[in-house]
Image (cartoon, rainbow, N blue to C red):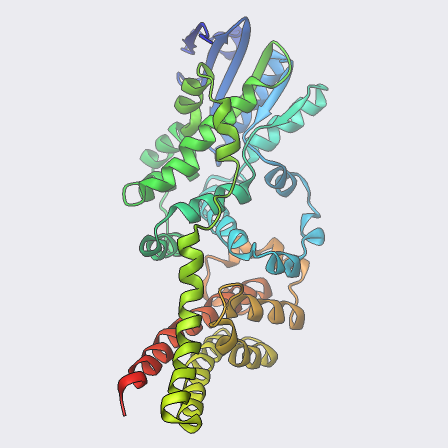
Length: 412
């Protein structure tokens, strides 16, 4: 179906009233579509000006509905001061969502550092949109894709070799000192912080831009179009404005199911995941059959030590609980023979049980993440260390132990 539409770009002769003529060009955009009016407010997620702008637009326009670039999880995180009391870290580990939580916190920490310098909490303008709408009894629509789906799609879209680059780039952003210059302030007015960070990564990882920006432009636009009412105010990061405007006058509803689904692991990857365990177990059995049980036993012991020692050493470096260190040594040789679960998840779960994080450590984690020493004092960050370091040690042990066993197939 062809949709008739036209765009009206806001200028200093603003589309609203005389009292809003001070708004800068490009902050607010109006799309007229099939008799409905969509007012798009482009914001920077760490800008006090954006907070004031959002309040003013909603107050003056009094729309039928306010859409915000939030999903249910992010909205709860912004609006609930007691949100950490309901967070079950052990459940996140059991459901293999710990890595997603880590990436969310890394990105949030990057935003918070800029926000601290500018004196505004990241996402304040999105929260202001919901508060203002609620005070005027205007319905609110959360229009962003579930952040867990976004992160997992981003991870799966990244090739194996580029995953390391992605992790390194995100970690580097934690400890990077960002100077807020006048030029930087002007940049923040033109784009939201996450879009800026992803644009930098996008030069080396273009697949990330597709998932984090382009797909969400489509998702946001379709959700905004389905919001109730004739006049809609939509508050989104400035980096999404152009993509959302374009998507609004196209019918992309057939893509919604695809972009809101986590792609399943390919059969090839599943087969590869089981290949290493089968090769290792088969090699030890073959050695036992051709060279004797004693030689096979020696190779088995080598496998246990090659996996257990670096994994437990990783837990030790993370100053994990003694039970976690022991668990790393026991779990690594076993979990390396199955793709179902890794040593990192076992160790993280044990660490969370033995030294559970308390509420104030969740509340200070964004600040603590950017201070290297705090990774060993904040119990939540120690759970992350217990997840990463033993897992990395187990990965090293798998290659070292595997190569040694394979070399013994034909050696003396």
